[in-house]
Image 1: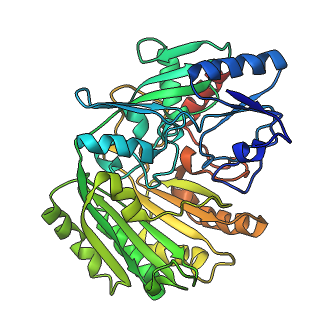
Image 2: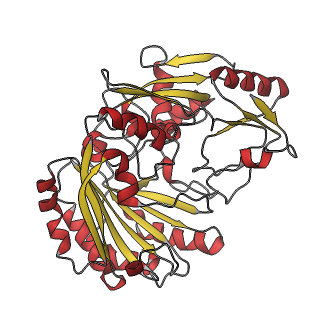
Length: 417
């Protein structure tokens, strides 16, 4: 393990994360390689009177570290047990690390749309992935957590050993210690049928209405979302999308491909597509193929609203607030929830707002004008809003929408205290 201080070679690189809108102000960084290093770092912080922060990839980084920053980026080990259908993930493992190991056994984790995202924080924050409506939140399928507590003790946290802490970590995510590893369940999904279709700007309201109506009757094996994206006119963007504010329907179906093809047929009736590609995809390639999210660090602000409904007559208003006439460039994502996400897990956890039917996320670059534009969107859907999603809050805005129900929030606060 190395301790790095401001001005030391490598300090700035170690502090940097995927999110570039913020900078850490740590007094010291512990570049750890294993659980023993984490214990030593926590003990050092306690002796020095320093607050502790943790970073693996920095995708969700919003609050700069001011004391000791523990960097877990070197802890990327993954062990798969194909007989038990589980995987052990070290603290810094990214989903692409996990997928590379699980694919050889024909198994799938409940990973999300970004292969470069840290698997541990994603899972503990809830985790809504490509198989979400069929299997539920990633947090629902965490079996065991290894954690260094505030005393520097290494705990094996399960429903039997530390039931209250196990409940809180799965859905409460942070503030309870430094997680050094997770055991998660895996599923027999070697491949999915999926892909996407893009519609031009003039069809945006029709796509929102069509997607909303279509989700009323799809089976739980189908997880989908609608993105509205202002594509820049630059090389690297597919020619049909350059300079257009397009709608992107993304679908993942864990069933028979022929049935999947029948399920998507009604969406083609919305209108002509700029691009379309569907087919059978190995699960380890599914997220990159379907979503194609940027993997270069950049600055972004964003937030979510978890909705009981998204009435069809809101389509025009959403496009007005986030489409090409918006005051700033906004990326919008409407995810279909429900299915297994709405049901309590076998072992209760802190994930809240399970009765949400949709998740609306709005992203942009930073700045006051962007904040105002985003909040105008959330104000429009306020009558249907339950709260916000912990894994999709990017920025230093006040928590105007709660991550958890009042009862869960009180229980988490008491345990953190």
